[in-house]
Length: 208
Image (cartoon, rainbow, N blue to C red; front, side, top):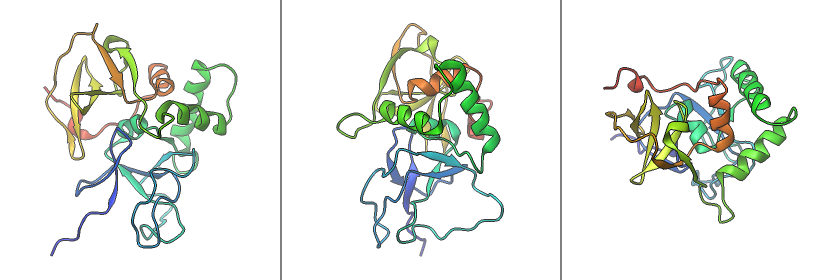
């Protein structure tokens, strides 16, 4: 009998779902589960990070009591859309590039806590729901994600590719002048526009 998938996969909307799909990154946003391994909250801390699947041979037992809840993402574009940022330890080079692009597009030289505080305000509204932001499609760089028809789409090569836990589907075209609702926080879109390139699932390559 096949094991029931754990509820630990994150969508671009920031929701945590159960699926058999595998992810390319993992991360956390604090302790979200109880002693029985059931999720009881959507987040605990402002520090939402995205990590490498493997780092220095470390092994973790999933959902241990009192330990942070291990979350998984299809790819980095998904993690960024959900409101996570690169981990400063296991993805140090990515984090340095991310922080530099952030510094280039924001005033001052922010601390990590400043980045996390700004991201939290952009990803969650007063009611604890995913915050969406309006933008013109032609203004969005590849790797950012939008919500259309109750689905998540990644901006890719002048079009949109539909997201699923297993990868991306066939391209859809839309007028660049169209107003869309972005899932990726505005500050992260600025970071991508400044040159930070999010990793994407192989299914996005060569999609027609």
